Image 1 (cartoon, rainbow, N blue to C red):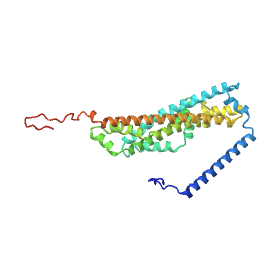
Image 2 (image 1 turned 45 degrees about the horizontal axis):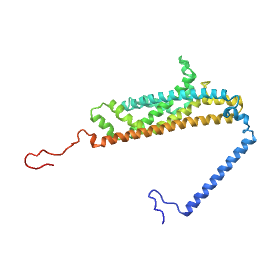
Image 3 (image 1 turned 60 degrees about the vertical axis):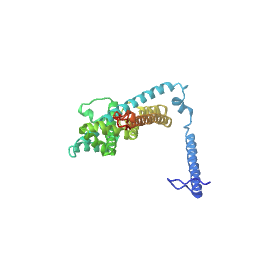
Image 4 (image 1 turned 120 degrees about the vertical axis):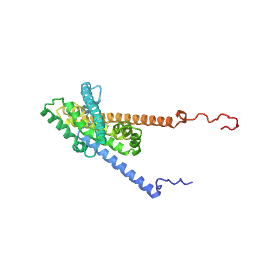
Length: 307
């Protein structure tokens, strides 16, 4: 019996399946050949020497404890900078979106101009300006705070744009319903539109938070500190003369941190969806409606009719 035809796409025929199999095999062989070439190249340059790997990856090495003490400091500073930048970006991004929604067409032009300037500037330039310009105005802070300011200056604008897109994607009836029940324009934005925009754009927001965590590594390019994760990897690679092994470890740690953040995003999204489903079910349940008539029986007035 032949398989039922798909309603989404045409099932591939014998030639298409054979062509796909050939391409898959050829691609796998090419990838395997490249991997073998890379391994042989690394072996010929001595990159598999145990002395290059053991200080970072082997617990019995005499330098392992000291090395991972430095890595712990780097991870702590990276997470601290990321958490502060995320918190400030979310608060300022929400305020920016709210301000753009409440201001008139011409009165919001300065806000739009500021958003376009900050969004168009590279993050590393903003971090550099924070570290070089602010001290000229007497703002003397630690290198960690310059990193946080630079990350916040760029990412709060991006988060604001994400939330504004979420509000624009909502049905117009949401705003009209809020105004119809007597809410002010500000109350409609804050109590009706913004909460739904957060829930609607949660995947995009989480993706931007992952970008913030990765962008903390830019501090190693323009700042003399703080000792964040990439800066720690640079110092270790210079001390042990093993840049490949050190940067590989830094990359693995960043992947691990961002994977945790991604898992947290999936968990939060599922909880919000489940909560939304429960709320909808309770609203749709007639037993929870105070105005539901529990009995349709009409007292018998002598005529003998009842329903």
